[in-house]
Image (tube, rainbow over all chains, first blue to last red):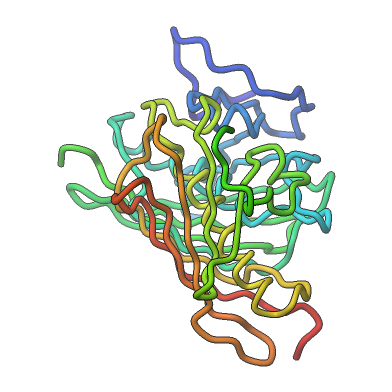
Amino acid sequence: MTESINAHPDKTPLPSTRQVTEPDGYVETPLWDPYEAFMGPLFDKRIPGEDGAPELWMAFRVDDRHVNTRGVVHGGMMASFADAVMGSIAWNTIDREPCVTLSMQMNFLKGPKMGDLVECRATLTRQTRSVLFVAGEFFVDDNLVMTGSSLWKILGK
Amino acid sequence: MTDIPTNYAPVWNEGFNAYVGPFYGAPREDGTVHFLMDLRDEHMNGGGMAHGGLLMAFADACLGTAVNLSIDGAASATMTLNTDFIAAGVKGIRLEAEAEVVRRTRSVVFVSGRVYQGDKTLLTATGIWKILGAV
């Protein structure tokens, strides 16, 4: 079992509000933001990508905290998950220096439902001295449900 | 939450909105929609500022409500949401949002809005909502 991308050797992560079984191949992601622990748990895995570089995948299991009145995942939850995933790749790319979201664009193709496992493959598209470009593709059962792209500002740069 | 104006009501207060909110909302006379909420510990990031995901969720709820009112309550869903993060949100100041429908066609609604604290804009948002069942 691989270690989570957000693991820290000394610090104890925040406990998530719910206990959820780890999906196959994933480990539970240590969470450091209270809001993410409030929505969590989240899970992640790194697998070899087509070009040999590791791909970061993260996932969450949809429950009653995440849905709207129609039983479909709230757009705000998808945005929150996108921010957590893309933020993880940005933050780890720059050796965990502080960084913040500059912008986020999302296209919603299909609404995940209660019990679905929503998975995201996050990709670092470009890195400049002060800004990171991160993209994400979101799937349920291999069907694309959302695409996202984001910019991250490295603070102090 | 204290001192909520009496004409404000929790919006779609089930599931996500009830868990993360409640988000209090009311229509204004000019047709825009205004939202209020108070930030709690569980809305923050590790740096003690409002989490970006929370700001986007609050914006999505406010923009979606403006859309809903413009189509007389017909079912709709976010198709695209674009957000720019202008400034960080802090605890202790009421979080507000406002949204305005820019255009409505037969099947989609264009909407624009922002999240703010006092005179400081935290996030600007534009989006397109699909009117479900409309072609």
